[in-house]
Image 1 (cartoon, helix red, strand yellow):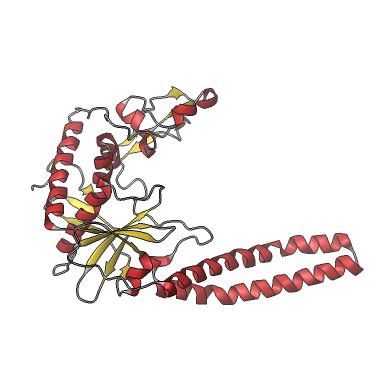
Image 2: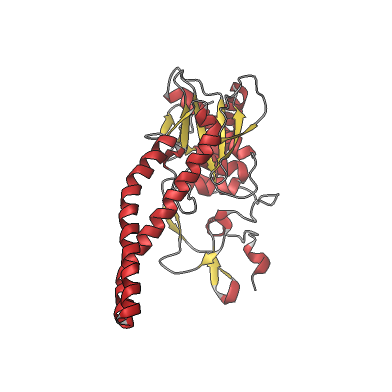
Length: 336
């Protein structure tokens, strides 16, 4: 495996994952490295803006931090609402209405903080019910397990403090989390935010490369698993990662680098033969707004390849602009 001489920057693991999904998606993902949030961004959970580290200790800290303010706002809101009722009942309805409007920010704060605290309690209850699950070194197939089963077994989640890089391969990446133990185990974690939760080739490829980066950047560590986490249900697929998978991933990296080199010589990759375009973010049309909606690559903005979309609006997409074609996204199935 050799470095990718001639490319302006190292290949990010997420770009290779996009390439496994679709060659054209991989090219665009590479050209947008550093311009958009990584696929390994913080997941959003209803009522809880994010679960810090998906760590029990961090959840408990958040609960203790938010509880005093919630109690103050809740007490003030209940007391204020009682006063409003008294004024409306025995005094002026219009005055009570004005006081109620003035109280709305405090009531809203108590409500939102209460929902956050309830969400944290739900997560802590899930952890309490969990049964420790230790990953067996003999496993050869993905194992379905719950996140808190792993945490309870002693796998501690940590957020990487920076990007990992293999200068020889010109590969870079930062997994969403690392599960680690005191005996040197380092397990990269991907968060999954979509529907139809299952293991795909792109997940295995990314986890294999993150495993490789863990071993390179943390000498002496053991990284023979990867975790795919569904952030809402806390279901996981624990995927065994062996040397063969790591080698296969680095070989695929070589192929991808050649595709990128060809693209720099204006040799565009072919139209995908399967149906990756239906829900692809790069092929999703958006309204064309001159000076605002242009597709941005690290080399700058490129021209819009516009089409007449719903309601007669001009629309375009990243993939359409880059390859000057009309990706068959699901949008067009209902466009007029």
